[in-house]
Length: 274
Image (cartoon, rainbow, N blue to C red; front, top):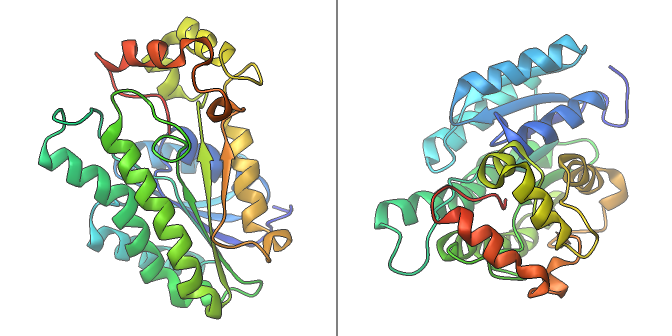
């Protein structure tokens, strides 16, 4: 395939479903050769089949990013399948829902490990391969406005893990800058993903989206485009940065009762914010 990323070797974690899958498919559509890492392999294989059906190049490997060994193995599998790595996008998150006193130690550790520790392990393993990327290596983390720019009720543990991820992005950017690698983050707000629809329902998603200052939820394409910027030569002078993409919600945190809409759903189900 031809396109802006023709021949680029791109790894995406959390790529079996939702935002991660959408990002992987978007890069593949621009000509990249993609390795999809997913904790549950079956949906990732379905995504691979869909990419190949459109003429793209894709592989998949099981990866639970809360496991150091899985992160190392994913990098090795990508190098074996693609011949190297130019871009690594860490989208996986084992989301721990709950406020103080509502999350077990096991769930707290799983969430923190999959989000923040996983970023450390992935970049550490991929560093020599990203350093060899012809146009400079790119590491992109999918963060969140929750815990950094704003607070979502009943998601304290998740916000803490995402805040740690942004701390990693800033520090690691200096650690690897001498290797020609940039490290940046995208911070989504509300995403109109399959998971959001499952949690909120179509009416709830529309109601929540109407409270966003720009008048809608973000789409998977919105965030894929941001990743493509950070992955491109145009972003060669950008590192240690985070791009808030929440339609202005963090500028008006009390607008329209967003917290009430989401909290009502979170009492019974898993969350819709990435």
